[in-house]
Amino acid sequence: MRSPFAASELPVNPWVYLIWLGFLLLPLQHAEPIEWGATGAAVAVFLPLYFWGFHATGPRMWITRLAMFGLGMGLFPYNSFSHTLFIYAGMPGGRGKTAESVVIIVLTLIGSYVYFTWRHLDSLYFGLILVLVAGFGATILVARAHRLSQQALAGKDVEIARLAQVAERERIARDMHDLLGHTLSLIAIKAELAYKLASKDLPQSAVEMREVAEVARKSLAEVREAISGLHNLGLLEALKATETLLQAAGLETELQTAELPALTHAQESALAQSLLEAGTNVVRHARATRVSLAIICEASKISIRVQDNGSCGQVIPGNGIKGMCARLQAQHGSVTFVPLNPGLSVVAEMPL
Image 1 (cartoon, helix red, strand yellow):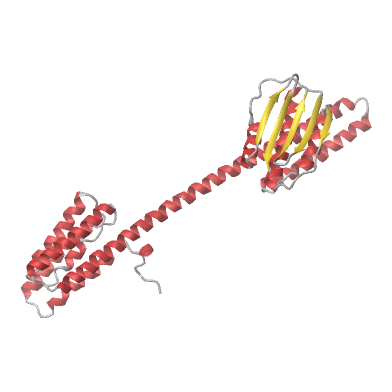
Image 2 (image 1 turned 60 degrees about the vertical axis):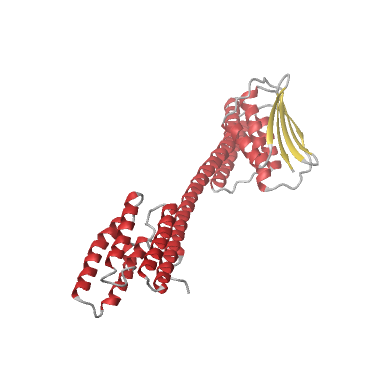
């Protein structure tokens, strides 16, 4: 059975601990009126001190604890159980620092021992004070530490959830950029070609527009998959899609493939998205006429290379390149941009 005073559930309500005042009634069964009056007056003084100092820290806590200890000493001639107030004097405050609380507990026990020895009281009384002050004091401190630890963990959980949301938004943004950047570029190229063919070759123009519709439908499906976190484009599928994009843009395309090793879904998706991004950038920025796409497998790594003969200016990382780098780095990979004369070689590598 779990104890009602388990450390994680110890109450911090000050009213709970007033039950110990019942000890003051034990010697009053056959007491004189003056003993009743002194006990009542002591309790009347004690209660404001107790509530004023329960959650106190610093000087106020020390003043209230010293006053309660002195009140217990002063009540002793009229009530032999006045040492009950020593328990409250040694109780850690609701918000007091741990070091202060430990010092108060120790000083209360030392003061109690000196007082009991001076009064020649039975050691049983001191044993009771020792158990209650040290036992409940330590339990309260443990409960407080546990509560603070739980609050800290709750704060970390909130921060982790926030970071997870940020990461998910970044993932969706990267996927949207990669997916829509590639497909919209292809749609724009084919739509422009269909427009040019409309007045010369109407059947071929219709074929191009049909392909535009198919690409649009496929893009919509991929967007839905990416939003739900299910999009996982295969590397060979990405190679075919990049070739289609480049050929639609009128670029001469050369392919070099290899037998793929065993890759995780995350690894293959990172390489595939990098290939799509590199191919899309060639169409948008390179002004090239020839492109080679290569998948190179070695014993310790796999690489993809996109090399064009276009004009190579300074590579300025945008959202696409930043997303490419982030995906590869997450899988311990890297991307390298090598200027050629003419052109640019983009190599994405990933260890196996």
